[in-house]
Image (cartoon, rainbow, N blue to C red; front, side, top):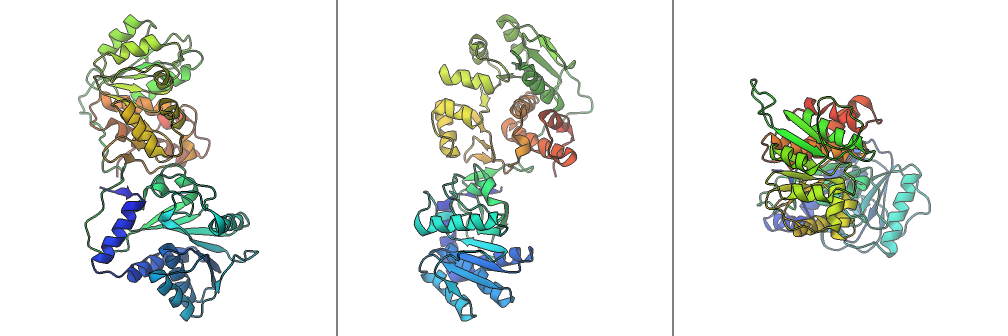
Length: 466
């Protein structure tokens, strides 16, 4: 199973590989060679490497040495004195005739910049010369240079994806040994650019415990229907919401549930607008809603619900039925604490809704996920770039694309998850997040950047596993 490591586990893996008999300098040169090989794909004509004091700086010196051997003009800026293997890498570069600057140049005349400043070692805002170097890199990028970061963009927390100020904005990040969590979630995808994993094998040590498990098509659980299946045995879903001018939210959620394969989808609303003939309308009263819910295999409550439906939320909360809680229902819960639900449920907050529930800042997504889990015994889907899903360890969906951040996207996800659950999926949250992201990416590939939520709904049934 593929996954990611945080900064502590990354350093531990590096240390244990060295203890197994591979020298630290050899591992450093493997990293430098892999980054050099990836850089050469871009056909650089001149390169400047910015090297910090640690092993990340040693990697940068190694890249510079390989560039020297290839005849490509290269310069290194040293931000601090090197030691150990990093010092050996500097001497290697200098022995080849390489030149080292002790301060940043006033102008940039190179088409590529190698960021070897901090790597996985950043857990607070950069200061002093390091902050100045990061700002210089970003200014040079704004003027046309391209940037490759080594392991993790400097200024990005490798464990959480929190971007400090300042942080390098890279076009490419070459990460070593294992995927780093921070490159794939939170603000990481906005700064890491295209991420390339280089495992630097061969090495033979036991892997570190994963920080997150990656959501891939190898772990999802899509229901398979028999050819003889009919609407009565494919699972029924009730969507409660789509009111007060937000009818579209309820309809998108219901239509997504249908497209995902549910046999019947009911819609409880008092809205006059009704545009999806396949949805079965349910009157807006508690008796009708509870009666319908008790006959369904899952219920969605919240999309376009409004803030005046607490009695309905509380009634559904008490039922012995799988419940997907989204949007306005989550906002209501943030103000009206209920006891832990006896039956399973899945909460699908975006970061602002999660902040309302927990009171925590949105930057550290893992602290927020843990706080949600402490608040209620549920499966939580913390939406956003690199969506996180409850688990031991948590799941991380390595997808970040603005196409998913459109009106109605969360409504679609809630409907997908409820439909999968109603059809018997054992991993409805993980599978739902995977299916939702791939439907949007397929719509993006086929339509272009003007994708809206209904485009993704129309493509749900076309998504196949590899």
